[in-house]
Length: 340
Ligand code: GLY
Image (cartoon, rainbow, N blue to C red; front, side, top):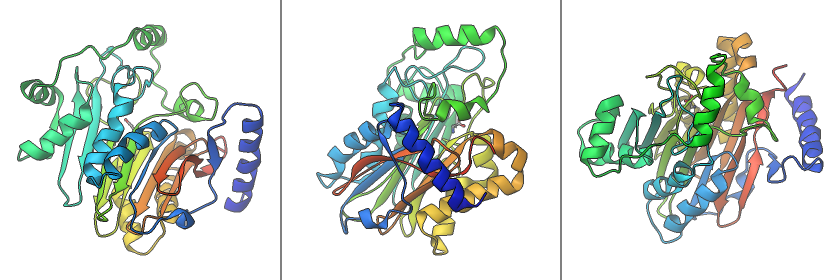
């Protein structure tokens, strides 16, 4: 099926979903959204429908003339603190041993970056990543070292495993099957989860960019597994000359192609954000088409002109946008329709 036919088919399907009341929040993406650009004005974009409230928090920083990197940190702290969001921060689904381990990274306009992986007991992984960036000579701290660093720097030790996530994990233990391909159906409109990682990128009133990415990772992963989200270049990349990109979905597929860096480099070669995201998705498909049919990956990008775009392997990937013109959620275009 051609991309065009696939997209038309999707448009009809998403219209039907809206009529069925399954998903009233998101609009079908009309393509690379240059027409929404407000010149010399801030903008923030983020993955999934819950990105809308996260963007609103980021906007409180941007509208006061604050830095993009400060805005994205404030923004992603919203889903991190939300116990109902089972893919980020507090209430995140645990690994197969019942431990909630968080991955996060942040990057500013000067290639400064910080990251934590397999962090435990601290809600705001993004702020720990920020502190790694600001206060250490390193880029990344992992596991016990990350947790120790956070606690030594005044972060509160908390139990992140909510009763709901614990109950679901105990149910999962009965079969103990790790099936990230289920991620596809969970991400569909009306699906059980309909979301995963939050990745957020922004440009401030001075034209400087920043990005943040935070997640509890794939549910029931092996203890110690690290996904794309805390890996600079995979889950997030910011190049202040060109633009910024972030990703969501099955992290292993993103790491293999260093996805967010690839998207930024494709924009450097002149591609618009949506086309750059599409090319990265096609790279994943070219590597292993059979695997690509089974999993979800979505990319989201913003260029230096304030134009933005997204593309996903499967339908169901939504993203939120806030600038002086737009405050809305859109569905990305996608390659496969139900893995076909
Ligand atoms: N993208 C989130 C993860 O793979 O952990």
